[in-house]
Length: 101
Image 1: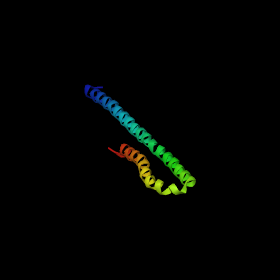
Image 2: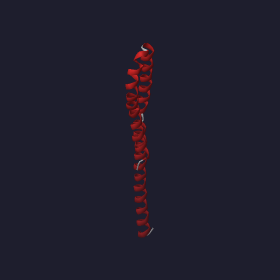
Image 3: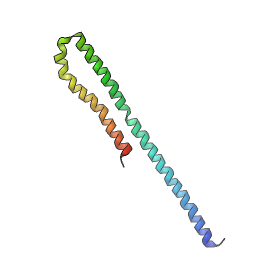
Image 4: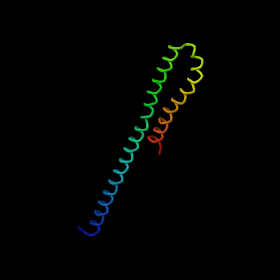
């Protein structure tokens, strides 16, 4: 084997090792993004549970005291919007993490 062939083989081996390292790093970054994006969706689950508990408490309060419905309705929609926002914001963040550049 002459010197030129040996040099080409050495450089090819170096490039292959570097490309494997780059591919491994890219796959690690992609896996980390998917894991982080998935974990961000957990607060949405909490918001869904919170909405269920909130509706149950509202229905229970109105069933016990129907005259208080007018007072409860004024606050019901505001609190509903806050709980819903607590579920929507993490979904947006998770989508930005997963699909963002």
